[in-house]
Length: 303
Image 1 (cartoon, rainbow, N blue to C red):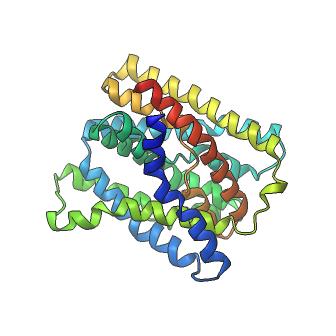
Image 2: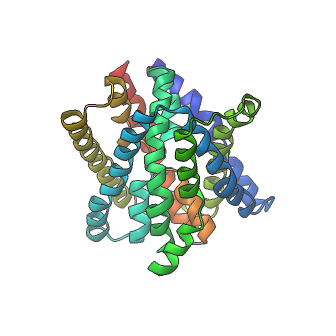
Image 3: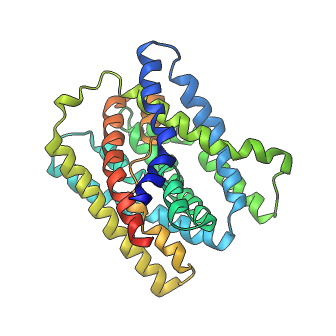
């Protein structure tokens, strides 16, 4: 029970931003663009560069590649689920499967179970899943509204990929961020999570949860969790037998990936594009409820 309390206490301040966003939207206090544009074009690129420079290069390469592969391959079962069950738009469903909320859910979990090194491991995993999300994933969300060519053009406007390349170059050059900037950079992760949860709250405004097809979402989210577990296990097995470049703790942290909910990035992208905002918010919320059960249960195993 203690592990549940530790994890929930770490998540609670951010979860409270969901009703805050709901209130802001209902009262028309602030337009969503004033939150998601600085988030996508300024805050996340800065966070990305800072986190890359914090990590060990070998772990960064292996874990980010593994995270990217999981996010990519899970599109296969997502495509099957989309065809089998009528419901959400196909590109949205695939994005909901491949966007993993690694840092928001992961940091309180690993801090309760492991140590500070586990946070660095999470960051490396996030860089891989984030790289997928801000390239192929963003293109998929855009396809809910645009054609393929326009969707690719929209994805190329997002600075994540350029910030990632810049961060790798700086890493190779052994660049170090000035200590004077550390206090500001330390709060970036908090600000990013707060902004994402606030957008989520704004996008659930008007959603009629009483009318949700519980059976449909149970099947979709159950299939997401099971397929992610299988894919993650396969990726870990390949790394262990053919690369063997990770520590046992890094592998244990990676096993938590399939249990994380869909990242709020999905609904942030939907807000930017003005497409599938309510459905994206529903998917994120329901996957979060499932993860509030699965993640602490998994943490008990490693305690």
